[in-house]
Image 1 (cartoon, rainbow, N blue to C red):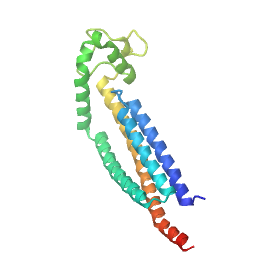
Image 2: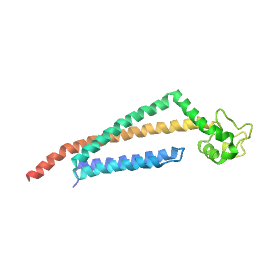
Image 3: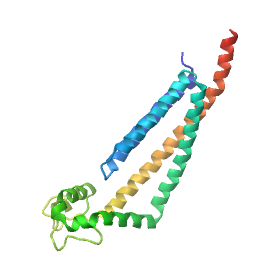
Image 4: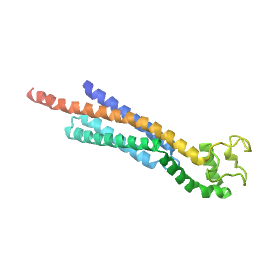
Length: 212
């Protein structure tokens, strides 16, 4: 029969993996580039670490348990640093300006040559519910149908420029990520404490079994 500490550890490992899947899915939905491979690789690595922890506990592999603890401590430290960085992104206006500038740099040429890039621009404007950029409006060329919910677009154009909508969307995701990272850090701390307690108890159990 599996002892209560080990059961608690396995359950929390399952919760940990579920949170990682949710975080990866949310990252994929918010990814403007369309590349999800890095997120998938990170998720697989995350699940592999959880599997290593469960295996080390069930098979009483104290060396693996120590390695698992070290990995968790590293993840906790990196998590705290990530939360600090994300808070800075949310709180510092200069960062928002930089995000806008980079976005404008990527999209202004495409929007100015709308007929050539219409599919890409329309996809962006529909997704973010925006129209044009702060330094570029469609006033002279006429609004694309993606600039409003129901074309033709005249008085019902989306009020936000795409650089503003992009920053708002990014900040919304960052705030959600901060909350999720805090949950992940709390779970990692719980796992580290549990496996530490399990390691302390296991040598005593092995000694008792040897004496019998």
